[in-house]
Image 1 (cartoon, rainbow, N blue to C red):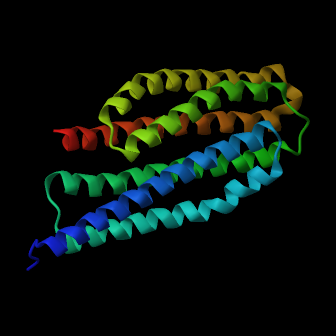
Image 2 (image 1 turned 180 degrees about the horizontal axis):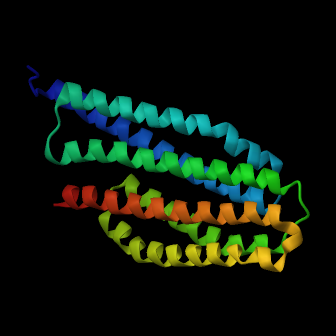
Length: 220
């Protein structure tokens, strides 16, 4: 039976800190993937597009690492209450960040296909959504790095507003085939990029809601 002496407690604290560092690594890699994917799309930057696709394996591997570290903590330290919630939430958040990475890879691959077609002026409609999304992404990751419930709570209404805007963008893009019947293939790629932005926003909402529960517990 494990005895919680000072040595064991230090090991436990170290394991929790390492888990949180891995969680923040996948968080910032997902954030970087979004920046690269949209810059590749808007600036027709092939290097940025290829980087997103190449980095996808790193995100997948990080999710596995977080799972393994979490299972190690659960098996060897049997955490309870707040610590248990931190571990289980880290598992769920890493999966959400990995799904954001997948959406960024989708954006990159579709941006790569867009390079085969004449430029579409309508692609600029993505920029204001991305700009707000990137700002919120950074603020979310900062809040999670400290499990700061107050900063995360402020972000929820902004995410909900952005969700409405991203849904409107998707509907707007879906109307373009009628206006540009000669560019259906390019427009279809653009529609899917808009849908990926919508799903990234939805995942960030879930991340904030999940992280807020941990933050509330840790502050109580």
